[in-house]
Image (tube, rainbow, N blue to C red):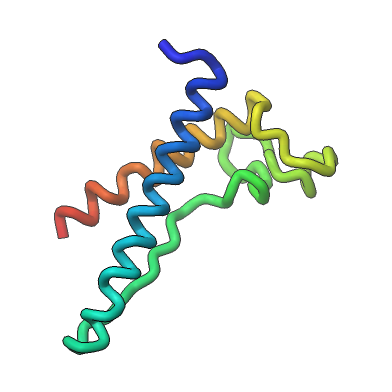
Amino acid sequence: MPGRHGTFRSVALFLAVLLNLALAAVVQAAPNALLSGEAVYLIQLEGAPLATYKGTVKGMAATGPSVTGTGKLDTRSATARIYAAHLGQKNGRFPRAAGRQ
């Protein structure tokens, strides 16, 4: 079972891979879309980024420095790890759902 830092790193790595896959798909699709008349879509996943999250999810405190008053995002805080895991779980469903279309 990973420790606190391992869990956060796992979530951060998952989100980075997900973003890279999405960007790679757009880059690969763009030239073909111009030639074939197909459309290219940019998809923005739900949920505020860790740096701007204002505590809108019930039971999850704000992580954004503008709300917390810390002046700097603390990615190692328990609050940040909890919200990052929430984003990973919530947005991790997107690739599976998109594959069914």
